[in-house]
Amino acid sequence: MGKYIIAGNWKMNKLPSETYEFVKEVAEKTKGASCEVVCCTPYVCLAPAIEAAKGTHVKIGAENLHFEDSGAYTGEVSADMLCDMGVNYVIIGHSERRQYFAETDETVNKKTKKALEKGLIPIVCVGESLDEREAGVTMDLITMQVKKAFAGINADDMKKVVIAYEPIWAIGTGKTATADQAEEVCGGIRKVLSELYDDATAKAVTIQYGGSMNAKNAAELLEKENIDGGLIGGASLKSEDFSIIVAAAK
Ligand code: PGA
Figure 1 (cartoon, helix red, strand yellow):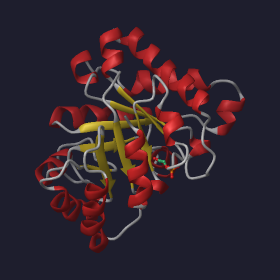
Figure 2 (cartoon, helix red, strand yellow):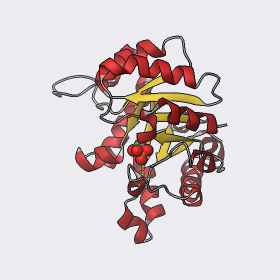
Figure 3 (cartoon, helix red, strand yellow):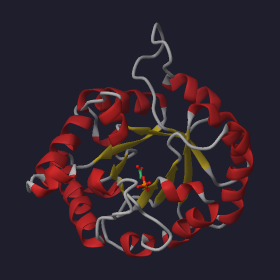
């Protein structure tokens, strides 16, 4: 299955002035990790994060990007800008961006293509709301999100993509999907990828679970066959908790 990746999503937390020391701490506490370790930070924290990660195993990611190369898009940040700084990963289509910033499957598709074109590794988020889960349409919805997010992306590029399955009802709520619920959807995503591409591509894609993953529940989730890592919000803000999750990803 895909290579194991544990990525922190700081969201709108931490100051630039706290970043250098924190990333150094993460690097120190996760030394010798058997998975890829990524910190995705606010734009303004990227420079000190990259500085701190230099010469360590830690990779740095952004939380968003714009799909155009440049131009009159006040307040936006392009893929070239991120690459120029030394950013490796970028989160795309997080449910908070879909909910509060009107991102759609179409913009997710454009952003994913732009990230791949520029050599950034996209972490593309999909996930259902509580209403959708209760209505029994979880897998239909996720299938649609996956098909639309990756429309027009070839198998070679697809192999570089990371997908984060994040049930919206589990994000920041302390309510984790059970390991079986998470595995069911992650396995379902892998099946959709085999149908859209082929088995080899489906196996190469890293599929993360995200949504209240923490130091206590990480091992059980990461043990599952189709869960190749985690996208961690709250627990990525404490280096000790984050390092315990990293250690659970073997
Ligand atoms: P959480 O956030 O771990 O705080 O639930 C996960 C995410 O939104 O990526």
